Length: 490
Ligand code: ADP
Image (cartoon, rainbow, N blue to C red; front, side, top):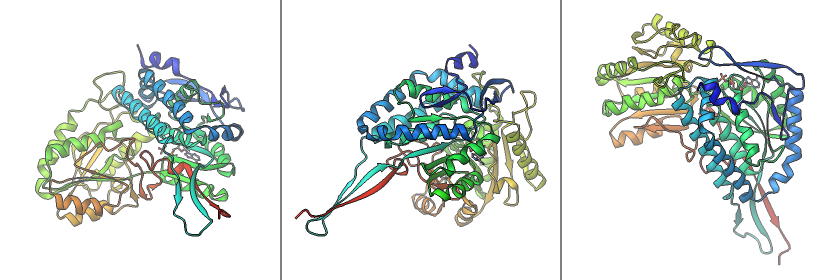
């Protein structure tokens, strides 16, 4: 069966507002394509501000009843949604791979990963504690209770079409908030399928509303949420410039923001590292989704004494990777999301080579497979003057930088406005302690390349944003604290 046949029962092409599938009010549609072939998958509702407003109206109507439900009742709905996501794992994985391009095994992994946030926050919904504050004055009782913040607007990128939106919707619903959302224009279908399953799981009409739009229409549609004082929070994963824009434009109504923005992750290999483990960890971290994740190592620093050995092992492993469409079970790396992404990768590689990098493997477009494919690439002798050092490449390119001392590596790693993930490999416990503390990042991998977990706080520092997703901290972003002071008790 083709990916499309597997995914077909879950494909929805309209907006989901107030518990119903509706076309965009303008009647406009935009085309969603398969990045492996360029073929049209579906023509999806192209929403504007009227659709955004209708979604907010529905979310506002649904809020009083949803927030009044017992946490155990909200948890039960989320658990049913979790079960339905897993029951549809194959079809959802096919849909993810179809619209995003990742290998099918990764698509299945994403379904399980995204679902794990739903189960996690279902449980967390029942553990939203407050505080009884120790008494300071006779006759007065002081307490702090947590309340849902209100309507949440969720805006997500294309690289994890299911997980990124699941880990925003789940904590919002767990907290008692209602949601309006807009998935990325490249990959709206998985998110739309997910809300259909939420509906089947018993999420009441108006509690979860999703609109799709092309990139052009998205600006005006989202602007309606930014200016609407009923929307109390924006949760966004995407690029730093768009995150800053959302922060600026929502300042008029002082919304709370969670921003999970771009990274420029360093990966340091010290000369006391287990080299085989470091190579494997780097491949796991770098090649997930073909290098298109915001925690992918973007700069790999290797200490002088082991540089040549490490580079040779890495080159051999990368040169052996299989590139191809998700329909081929042997594929380890799929197409990039679109031609714009491939052009950026090619620009970074050309710029690096023009500035003194050496090509160890790859370094070309794989046009024989299709326009969106790029060969997994290793570049030696990278330096800070290259574009790939300052910007996220977001593709299967590994640049190796040589360093001498620990301090040089840490300084170079921190020499970026970003601070999402950082990784290092060392077998020295004192160095592990020093470097873990010195790295300016929200997430640090120590002798480990796979860091994501629903139980861990995911988020950045510096211009990688603020707020945390997952973990016991993940609900705080969707709650506000109310202080209650009761007098006259004596
Ligand atoms: P990427 O580079 O990964 O596409 P973006 O930050 O451009 O990241 O996009 C992430 C999400 O933000 C997408 O859903 C996109 O449609 C949305 N988006 C991009 N620009 C704007 C904007 N000006 N206003 C509202 N949403 C936007």
